[in-house]
Amino acid sequence: MQDGLILCRFVHFAAVLLLFGVGVFRQVLFARWLHAFEASPGRGSLERALGALTAIALISATGWLMLTAANMADDWRDAIDPQTISLLLSQTFFGRVWIIHLLLNLTALLLAWRWGALAPRAALLLNTLLLLTLAPVGHGAMYDGTQGQLLILNQMLHLLGTGTWLGGLLMLGMLLTCATVDVRSVLSRFSGIGYALVAVIIVTGMINVRALSGALWPAPALSGFGLVLAVKLLMVLCMLLLAAVNRSLARQPQLRLSALRASVLLEGVFGAAALAAVSLLGTLPPMLV
Picture 1 (cartoon, one colour):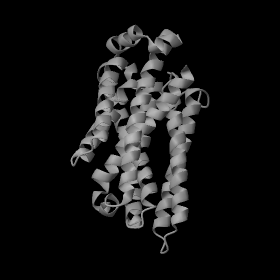
Picture 2 (picture 1 turned 90 degrees about the vertical axis):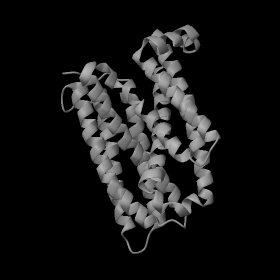
Picture 3 (picture 1 turned 30 degrees about the vertical axis):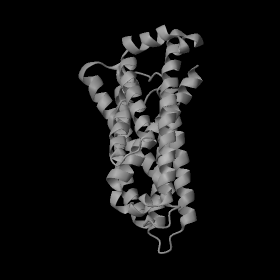
């Protein structure tokens, strides 16, 4: 049951973060660099991938709800019991947030099926709200009042930074296969933005740890919550190192596309590993001191 919940959390976080990050990359950060890509066959492939991600997000969000109900009652049968699910949705903070989250996800899916001229920006708005409504359902719900609200706000910033970075990696991977895009300029700019994103991710992450554990690092340091947190931090540092490698490769006179593709792919693998750690962390109690 717990393993299924962790898997649903991982899949859902990955889908929502990528949906948001790709939208920010296309509509905010690099819109004027992507005219050639938006007119290429690659756009069609990307739109289909985003539609699939939106469907995956809705399915995994539903699975998350069902497994939370089963976990709450400690009985698999309650995963499909209407009364238990109704109780979870109406009587818990998670449930009330999740109603909004599911409605946003369903609206985004309907929008993906009926793509219009204004759809990309509307989709970005919906996916931003979808991402932000993930912030209150984790450890941030441990506290009430101002402290809880500030922790949720901090988690929102953490998710926005993470989504922008991971979605950007997906877009870079696609652009490296598109010969009509000035990859060098895009990569150099994104690498610079990446350092700011990493700063946001690390600072907000440290604030989360301090608020949840009462210390700069949970105790025991390399067991349970602390161990998984250490793995996540290691993955983020590996991603930061690869971002520096990408920036160095982009500055070389002769652009080595094969090396760039490998580096971006590896950075994405480390990002997936960090997400897996996050999915597990959300199910573990922080060690308060």
